[in-house]
Image (tube, rainbow over the protein chains, first blue to last red):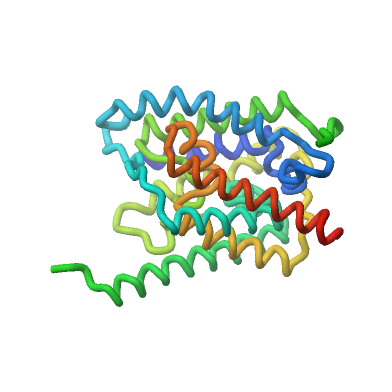
Amino acid sequence: MAALLSFAAGLLFGIGLIVSGMSNPAKVLGFLDLTGRWDPSLMLVMGGAIAVGFIAFRAAGRRTRSWLGGAMHLPTARQLDQPLVFGSLAFGIGWGLAGICPGPALVVLSAGEARALVFVAAMAAGMGGFELFQVLKTRRRPAPA
Amino acid sequence: MQIDWNHFTPWASLIGGVLIGCAAALFALANGRIAGISGIAGGLLRPRRGDAAWRIAFLAGLMAAPWLWRAFSALPEIRIEAGYGTLIAAGLLVGVGTRFGAGCTSGHGVCGLSRLSPRSLAATLCFMGTGFATVFVVRHALGA
């Protein structure tokens, strides 16, 4: 049931990306090009999504169990830290270089764009680098007994 | 600032955004989870027991979207302007950055801002800031 629901949520998310125009990297770059001929569409995508999300997450935050009866896994951290800031700064540079972020990358890959395969392979390698860093970090600093 | 009225799609983008919001809402309420693509995908690289199926299902749904679309009509234009070298650099930065930064446009930008999370607001300002700056440098300062 959880898998079916996850599939449906992913599908709806992907359809939303295509309807909104965000599956086109050139359009995303049009938004990021503030000083050129600026396409504000992405702001409306965020606005529409957040309008729904704001209501939904308020309701979700009051729940102790999900509709399916499972535990809630919503984040609780509120402190800023260096990985958050420097990671996000680096992500933005990559986003600005190609106009592609992780969601659209997978949609465009599935649509059969060969160039998206190059991006997704590099993205997976980058994510793998993060995992490797985590493994090395825990080895160097063993958890206190 | 000059608005590109030829490419601006206010209604389609607003409706698409609402659909994305509905997907995130469904995922949070029914499954108790954040619809953040980088976290869902990155978590597959070293999955804990019993933690992979829902991730694979979500990503399969996401990747089924263009196929379902094609069953009814032609996909809208997809144009990737970057060359292969740029795509590799961009992909590496997006992969490393979203994992250290604990989220991307969906997890921080959509879900995090909806939750009024200060971490997500900071993250969104950071990646939007360097995103704008990068396009400015590539398109205007370097005059590509």
